[in-house]
Image (tube, rainbow, N blue to C red; front, side, top):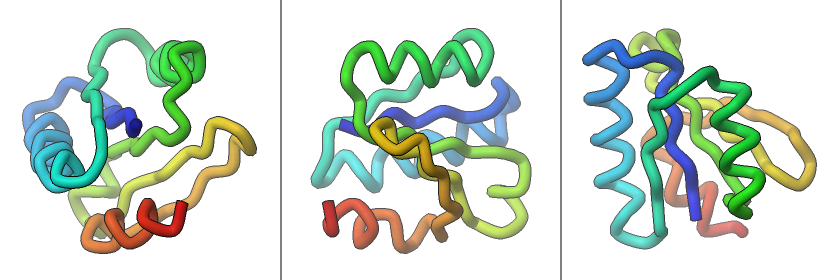
Length: 91
């Protein structure tokens, strides 16, 4: 399961979140979460056991990269959107 978290409710971030959701739904269970602050959304996803969160920020619109946060290690890394499926296939 993967949480998809746009940093704000701006239309361009929501649209990108929907595109990423459609791409990942082919192989994974996903959930888009746009309510409350990003910290609260991370905690909510942690509580329900979501192992990874994909955060879409304003830089994502420029560089086509998102931040992946691992629930267990709390480590974050930037990954190109086109490489997301390959990234998650490794786990």
